Image (cartoon, rainbow, N blue to C red; front, side, top):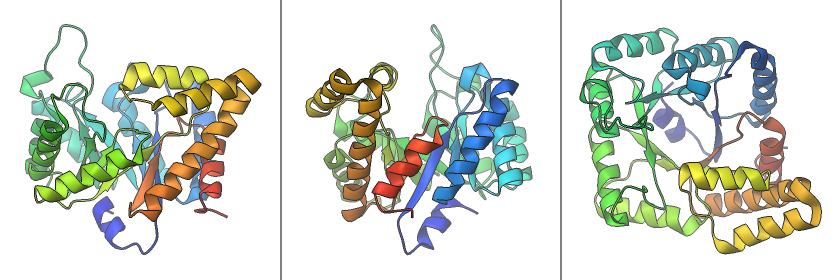
Length: 290
């Protein structure tokens, strides 16, 4: 079922999760065990990233099919400009639809060094959105949103313009990059509304589990971490190592989620990095699971 339709049919907040395709066969059993634990949260959908470890869209499709057909999950595979070719995009979309999947997330992806566009001119996520909308109008297309602004945007105002353009090109909802200041998310919604866009945008939350993890996130995602949170992480680590950071991260994520939902967010999208226990505990503390 299409994610926007699922959201409209709900009378309660929802949770969704982001999953990474296993990089090798030996990781498959652990991945599926984590999926089974996360199903206890009754996720509205599971997003599947494009090619952990370089496996590209093939690993994404195989994992998405397994989750949809073998585990009964509503699935949203990522499609990227980096991994997609215009001349084979129709076949790629047909393969997705054959699995019964009706949702995709269209993102640019990170181009390799020396490459400034995807194959055959798929340079921007908006290019990909427009092609998917033309080739497969029955699919619901999601796009990335950036409450703190995309690192390549010159201003928040410009970034909102780019987001609205992607939504106008055929996307029906957005999923944010991770963020830590809820005011940024609600400001983004207000700015979208001011330019006439009311399509749903789902906020993403990262439960922090270690000092090393948050440092990698800061390097890879350009996600600004407020000084008080970074100080809290470092203080927890100094007192009790990564176990104390994990407890701090659970409390922080549960508080962030509760605030988002209390102020009108339709649900939350979690980044468990294929680790279930922490996310299950976060949702329990946020009052969304037993």
